[in-house]
Length: 264
Length: 309
Image (spheres, rainbow over the protein chains, first blue to last red):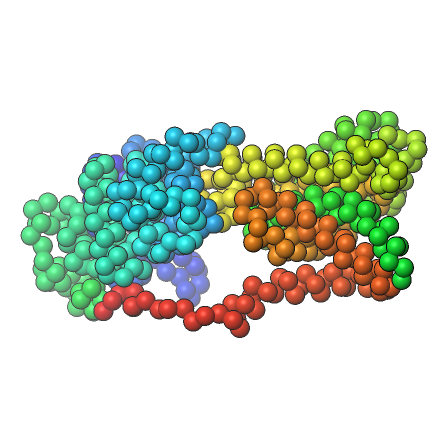
């Protein structure tokens, strides 16, 4: 489904701030894989996501989704393959537009936009049903501006928008990190529900090791722009936080120092 | 300071306010919807006026002349959009570049700094002379008001289409728009074109109304337009929530601006100072949201740390 071949990205090349964010990075995802991604600050997790999403062009390597080489495609053209949820709840939705209008924007992802209606009456009914799965009572306030929703509500809505047109690949970039624990758990449950329902191929970055272990069928750990751990199948199912720490030390030759990731 | 003089000046103020209202609606599209302060308008207003007058002087019909003026305005927006998106120049500078370039272009269109048109010899749609003593359907206030209603209906429809929604999303959140497959550069260029098309049309009307196109007629248009947007919002935001009515509110703001201006003139204030006054009033209104945040903000309730450690 996704193939990243020898992708390299260097920020600020030739300056004192030069940073190799992705270093000859390769990753292949099978159809239906749900991969959780962990790693410390600056390990290259978000850079990997941005390389796929097309925030900028990579310096070397190829990115292929479902047989289409998207390496040189601009961000908005890649969007038809991708569903994205960002860390900041403000990023994923248009605050000055209504809930239904936001969903309608997502519904038209990958389609030619012209002078057809921005949202039809039929869609209103469709979205009223759709938002019920979130269990947030949004079905009664579809015309409310997204700006008045809480962070958790906005993330849940963004998740719906990302999956409204079934994406080839769902990118979740620490999408629960900015939420309080209760809301975060709820958004994660919804994520699990939608991913299972639609059999979505998913990449989920998280800073929380427990979440990384509890979700998905494969776990990768990044360090210095490379994959240093890749655990899948039965091994992933039996994994504990302690195992993960030992494996990390063995793979990197360092002790894991990020308390947040361990305790979170 | 005869109050009757003030009253007799009112219809003219309203007519001018309405014509500038179209400019203000154009500015609303870039400033409020796209979140760009587009300075092209100082040039494109004159472009619209110049094109309209020159077309009419060479024997074209007033409707054709105004249509071409609108298209000319849209081309100026296209130029600014090109500077901004394709060449990566910050929007405000892109507008300034267009504005400067248009000064030369406007001079070339007119051949000199000022071109007059005689209302008795040409069949104008609006004029200073069509304010009093003409049948109501010929009255400039009526004509422009109808024009604004039609434009607002057209814009209301457009901003409800897929393209219009994409444009609104672009102004609100570029990241989200691109993630939803919207080409934000196209949206911006389109918005700038629509906005300057409206401004070009307003220029065409203004030139007819005053009976001439002048190289300086657009000077400060952005400030007058912003003043109209801000006054209109302040005056009508509690009553008007619908997008179409908000645009009408902007036109009302423009009329209010011209009425206040007329009162200030009637009070005997030196007219040389009017632009300074406008600039100060707009500056203060633009500062309002900032001051409100800074000095009157309620302390935000902080949630637990992001990592809930």
